[in-house]
Image (tube, rainbow, N blue to C red):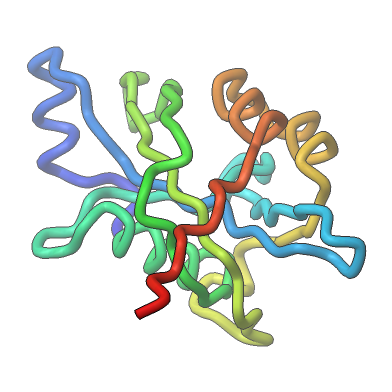
Length: 158
């Protein structure tokens, strides 16, 4: 996906808030504790979660899953309800714009050995507390640190 979405830049120039979607890839370790995957950004090499622009014709959670595959090389099941939101300042060519991000949890079922952005990013499995310490965006850091998995939905017994 393009690093900068032209439609989003036009909206930002008009002073409108722009949106992105993100995934927090997660798995349960052998003790049943949650681990999350972070990836490095391409330019500043800071640890972030996979994120990108909404995709025409795709739901937010589907777009988040696609970003997770492209940026982190993971496949899995995206939970229906967003885990939360955060905002950050995105660096454009000659300005910064405020971006609101809707975050979805992605339960990882497969970790690819080779993926689209493998040569441009590093990935790491961390505890939520460790991940939160590495994330620069305060709202995202708090979201990751306090991450709770939703209770499983009941299965009909009919």
